[in-house]
Length: 115
Image (cartoon, rainbow, N blue to C red; front, top):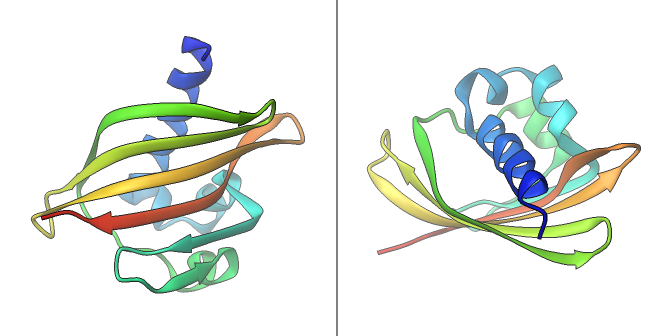
C-alpha cells in the first residue's frame, strides 16, 4: 500500500470525525460518496441523506491503529480504533473508500463498541 495514499485516507478519516466537519453538511458532503451508508455503533443504519440532513454525533474522538487494505484498484478498506472522550468509550471502525471523479470518497462506514 502506498504510504502517501494511506496518509491521505487517514487525513480524510480524521476530518470525518472532527466536530466542525460533522456539523457542516457542505463539508461532510464533500467526504461522503453519493451511495454512502453507515451502520452506527448503535446498530442503526443511516443513509447519506440522513447524515447530512439530521446530522451525526458530535463528540471528541481520536483515531488510533489506522490500517488500510486494497480491495480493488479504486477501493480501499480502512480499519481503526476510535477513543470517544465525550462518551467515554472505544469503538472499532471500518470504512470503505472509493476513488470517484478524481478523489477519494467514503462509501461505507461501521462502528462497533468494544469492551
